[in-house]
Length: 71
Image (cartoon, rainbow, N blue to C red):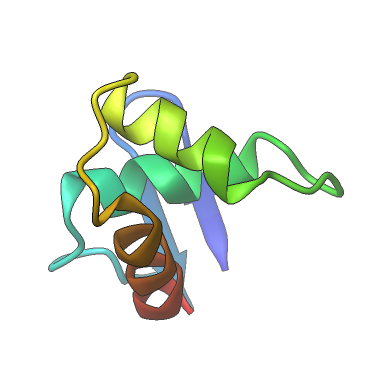
């Protein structure tokens, strides 16, 4: 996998783009994880970053869904 974070955010596998149908928040989540290599990022921190303090009640489950889709 190759990732480009500056300019247009892209992920490629064997030269082919792989983020075509990924939602904006899923891209943001992936970018956060890529910027924190080797470090744990808590679900609470991801919720804070993705919803800027105005998270819906379903935020925790949504983060888990996003992580599953990105895998």
